[in-house]
Length: 113
Length: 113
Image 1 (cartoon, each protein chain N blue to C red):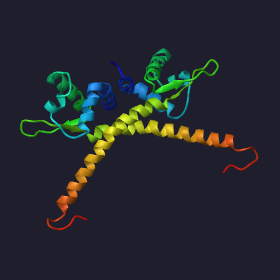
Image 2: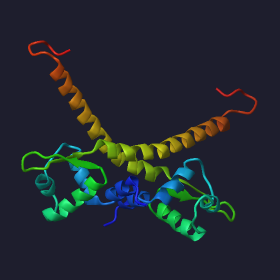
Image 3: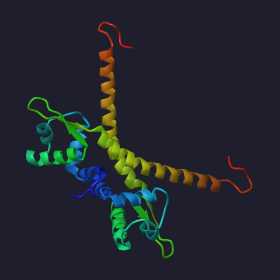
Image 4: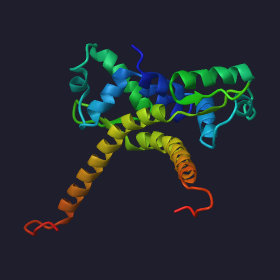
């Protein structure tokens, strides 16, 4: 079963798709504008955009004949919440290490500060 | 060219590997212990662990005949820093939206609060 986190992380595992997201971090833009800095055909860029859209990382709206893209908050939040579990675990490890260092630095018999 | 972000995000795009990281968030453990809850052979789990290790998301140390695994802070920090760029962009968008809402709610001619 492919979960949305599977497709979200898979979508991020490509430098062109990360560059597209970095561009969209500056604001909403069209596929034509997005394609400009890349040495890639517009259909190739469109395929990358489709992957990002399917993964829920970007969203597109209809504006006349244009379909501008922007970052999709819910998809990015989902990734962020999952990573938060790892961040918190690393912070706890560092807290434990701090405690051990304080204990090592305190001469025996003296109360810890 | 495969960058480390490519391999890190690709490593996260698998539910078994995310489950291994979630288990390691509780603390360092051996491959044998890691393999227990999964309906998978130990070699299959070892292959997933190898992917996580190559991506720099976990690290292993030698403890006699054991090689316990734990989360690798530098790899997880690298992902986190990249995502921070998207988070900040989304926050800026929300700030802009707040400003627009305040302007819409303020009758014309009155000073904004």
